[in-house]
Image (tube, rainbow over all chains, first blue to last red; front, side):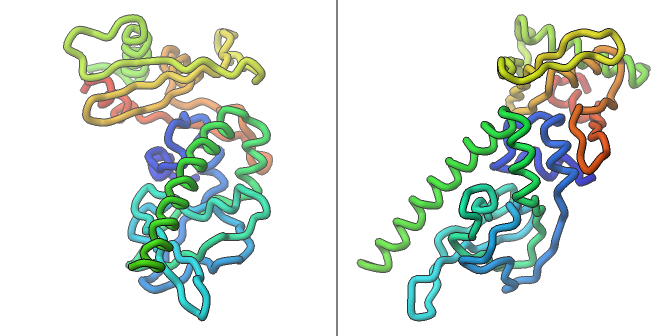
Length: 150
Length: 110
């Protein structure tokens, strides 16, 4: 089982007790990526929620004509890939490492099943996710404004 | 020199005492979040005590927050650091091993 330490301080699981983190740690796996490596692309099927344990991940969106803009950069304890928990389960942006990166990947279907069994876990995670999505929306809006008027 | 069981009991006692009244000059405080009334409670495998699923929150001035279930605190009170969470993943029960030194750090017991 993955060390609970890797999840305890993450923005998406902050507030969960060890009892609640333990089943998540059981289903999670660690993965490493090189600088420049893509973890997933926009519109890919969203199978995993990710927590960064080391390194830096850029969240990108396509803005047409083959161009992409970075709407957020996720660092240690930050999360990306929230689409794995929210229908229709397709990533709304891509994720690419800007330096060597280690992540914890949690399968969305298993995490959703756990949420169905425990309303406190579900409430805590969904509250954090709402906060992450809200921040991402704000960052995206700023990026689009700078593209239009910058 | 305290045994691990004694250290565990000391941690549980410190948490429960701080919940009632934060020790003078302490760099931490303990609060409790009540369990969901709709969720099933569990029982201690040693004494049968009802464990509704409350969560104790230790907030330390420099270390930040640490969340512990009522089950964790209860088993620490029995001198135990290992217990089953009640969750089953792929047919196997999910257990927790608490780190005494880490918890002592949140309660300035080191």
